[in-house]
Length: 120
Length: 72
Image (cartoon, rainbow over all chains, first blue to last red; front, side, top):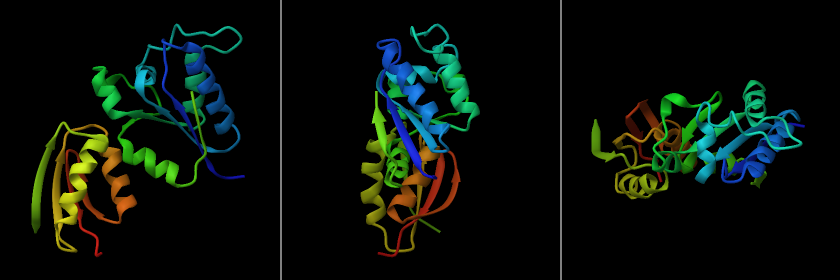
């Protein structure tokens, strides 16, 4: 069954449970042949930086880095909120695999295609 | 032929689009607008915005984008 799916993640180390579960669900979607996009905004944009998620490992879940790597390898896309990214002074040359900095129009375009979305 | 130009500087996301939209509407149909946008999100956002609004992206060589106003 084709289709697209969006997972919005607004947390990183301020709520590692939400950040982790967001990527677990994203992996479920991409593994279900959905064109899957994770939208990182607010504190979630920190996950776009190489190394940042390396020490996040929620009990009962795979390490977040592993979840993110698997997501990218499976073809999942990560959109990173541009103003949130700039506000925090993050580095464009340290983006993880699959990550692209975008503004609101790119998110609107994706969701306007009829993609369901779940937020963490 | 470029009808109008605007340098948005570091502006991005919704703020940029809210400034860009009326500038495009002010053009005559078919005229070309040259936008300079340094925001890294513009690379993905400007083509997406053109697709959403019906304006045509003539060229995109970040940070310079040329956009042809839609017919209506």
